[in-house]
Length: 460
Image 1 (cartoon, one colour):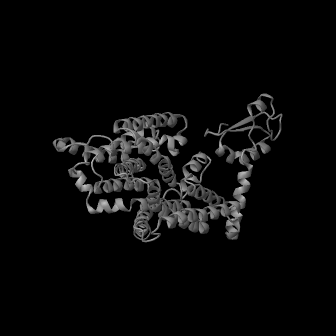
Image 2: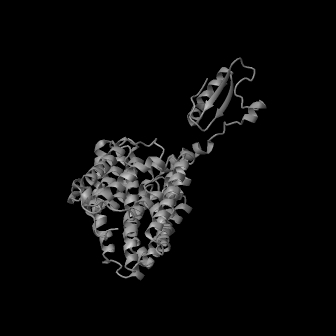
Image 3: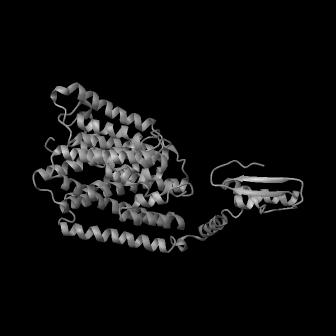
């Protein structure tokens, strides 16, 4: 492995990744832009593994110092973002949604927001798409990985590099196979949880043990580097949300990311130099704050105006995201990373416990008080009460197959009437029940309702 140094083209690669995510979330054509998260995972695995290995070779690696660096990198901007989200939601969210948001915030402080979002995902969780903290699942996956990964590298440090490469490759294959299996059997689990995502960061780590291209491989490096960047843009454009993911589908963008990193390792390629230009590098430098800022802005807009935002609104949201990201990077990220704020490790240790504890306490209070419904004006309280009454009705007209066989079905109108009506459907059918019921009462017909989970047309 080559001596460790700053590589500006990787910041350029970060820029590609975050732009894909922004365009995807803003619904601006790149329906597969979610692969940007996978690009981040591979980059992270490569950088963290390289840093640890170089520290180990110099006998300078300390687990406490490693975690301090992670805290300085991740925690301050994250704490600021979650605090701002909860404050803004207190003025704009309905109580039920505010309470659910506080639950996500609580799990996020415990590095478990991916678990919370997995457990609460599904058809009936309408809040998921407008949850301003939905994007924190990837942060949780990454931090969970780095809780155990340094210990794995410390244990492997006693063995030759070939042994370490084999172990990491074996874990990589196990995770990838598990991801591919789970994506067809438990897709939400495969998407959100660490065991089915770890292979992406392990791939980045494996790069550190591979032989590098030498100067004689100039043409090969140029081709690999160019194909890698164009391939990532292609995946971002042609992938879509219905694609089983991650699994093998995620392997292509991850391998393209690895290809770019490897092909620029010894010397920069032509496209590597383009990616090292100031605009790309700057976007890469603010990419973490940009990732934190963009989704809450879009989520709040969708919550207020609906999923279909105007083009001007989307562009304004992206501009606002960049402005907030620059502020966060300049006045939050950089002072903490450069030790201008909390210069000593013990200060960081205290902040690591105090700041999340305060957010956890606030989240618990919000959740226990059901989102503080009293903060709403009367018209909003009346709307909420009506919505809850409708929700409490749910499937009062649902019957089981056993009841059908025993002829124990609800009857409206005249049981001896000439006509029978069967209503078979989901929540849409349930919405039509009052109309159908009133019609049967006046027309002396028999009604047999059955409401199912999946979307089926109402048959009469």
